[in-house]
Image (cartoon, rainbow, N blue to C red; front, side, top):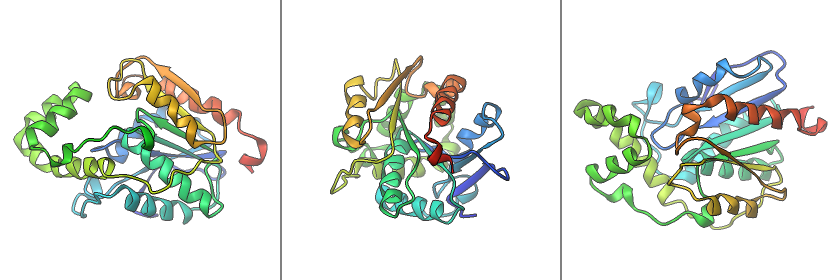
Length: 249
């Protein structure tokens, strides 16, 4: 198995494969709690970016297009299965980019879920990756106040800040030359109290799919899915149940 993919559960004859892409600074283990809520016939894999957990000693990749290429190649090496892509925050941009690359070689996802992120053509400009440590950490805490204890620890801050800065650079410098519309449906998931992404921005994902885009709002802020994973997973399962039969073959 590619180091880009962490297998959280893999069965003999899965109905579908759910691949989750974490947020900036996030790791594959962020999605481990989802195992308790998913039925056994859905495989759960999470993308592991370099520079964290078991890949801690590997060089960071501060380019979103390059990240997407590596993830795409890792997925293409797997046996063909109905594929669901779920990306949160930076992972949402990657889910779209990977979805485009997979469709280009005829292995497109059955469904793409983008969570808590604006589409590329509505992403506001920013250069936080160029700012000092205090400014970058302040932005993190604005989105996730629960992380305050981690960033208050000097040793942990020294360990994890380079990873986060690299991820910020990847998403802030991502400017696709061409925006392609996915054949796969796109669902947009958003916390009602998310101050990072407006409903208007979320609605603009409709420009990037040939299907009508479904937008679902959940109670919570930018990390609403950490606070209440069950409603999120229920929505994903509903989508699996509604997939055309040919997508499950």
